Length: 386
Length: 86
Image 1 (spheres, helix red, strand yellow):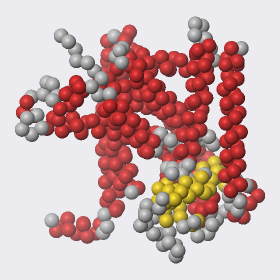
Image 2 (tube, chains in turn blue, purple; image 1 turned 135 degrees about the horizontal axis):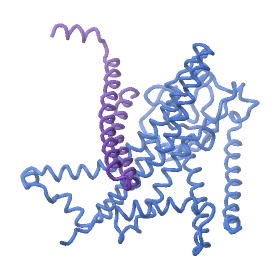
Image 3 (cartoon, rainbow over the protein chains, first blue to last red; image 1 turned 120 degrees about the vertical axis):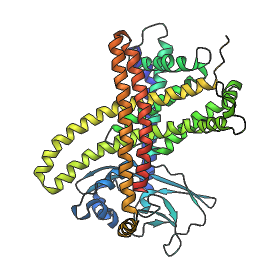
Image 4 (tube, rainbow over the protein chains, first blue to last red; image 1 turned 60 degrees about the horizontal axis):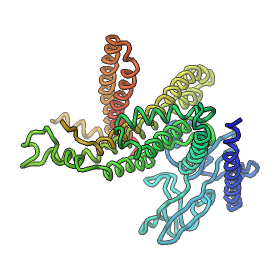
């Protein structure tokens, strides 16, 4: 009873934002009057030539291309393909070119020349997947760079998962305030052990009793953001299925935050330990400062490794699962019976890999958080007084 | 040297050799990761056998060390993927 009472404001918030979301999406559809791809009736007529070729292509199944398509970012969200019916959600494109901002729906690019308002979404070649400016004859005119701030598939997935995170954690915080002296129940009892785990085993043990509280918001945010986005990437259908943490830009931003916080909160002893590392012989520091150079490179490489580790783990897991799926289709193209036989083995391996990916989702979030906490602890450490 | 010159001529452009290099690089890196994680597992099992009541601490430390070693192997995967696809 107390759980449902505490969730009523959260439900109101949810209903309001779902309503706003519907209004926003319907405005996007209304602005793309000629080529709304989510409209089933017009789809078989308006599917442009290039897309039909890349999807059906004389029945040939290109595994590498399918895997790459699912792993990289995209300007529209391909939800499902039922027979010859392509369900995609066209996403808004926001460009900054020559001091002016252009916004339009990505389904405007689905005409036969592929260009709209002088911009073109390249489908192959060195600029594949990027939006470039083309001149009047259709050649590329790249004198001024085009800055792409579009809501792509990964940005939309980040919005969805952030919205869910805010919803869940605001309701947990409210129920904690309400039940301060009672045992937790409901969602709070699910998340409180994780939060206590991060506070005790990660923050307190790495940063120390006195200073860990300043860093707790960042550590908790990073942990739950990575964990939830890893889990959503494993869900194969609509709100999940976007490879958020496997995008190197996302992990780059998180690693930059760790680097900035470490550098800002570094105290005098941290910098002294970098320039004049204790316990190292003097000839490594004095005429040719080898040790300080190594330590300064170390300041940059530690967050860089954080970025690469998360990106490569998640992307590799998705590639492996998608590879098993394409194995079924490759063998199925040879003969249907072979496809069925392979599918038994393939589904078993896919189950195993997905379970392993669940474990990896948690472990990678935990390792990122733990290493960030360790770096913060190193930056704020007080020397021991003997 | 003459043989090498003939082989270089036959190879033509080096894109195919680059791909083979990527495959070999990934394979060799995985050997290193396998040996590393195998060592971690071996010492974890030995210490659990010596002191079974510390199994929780040992297990979490083993997983952390394995994730760090795997991170190094993933560097090699990223470089090889860059060679293959860019």
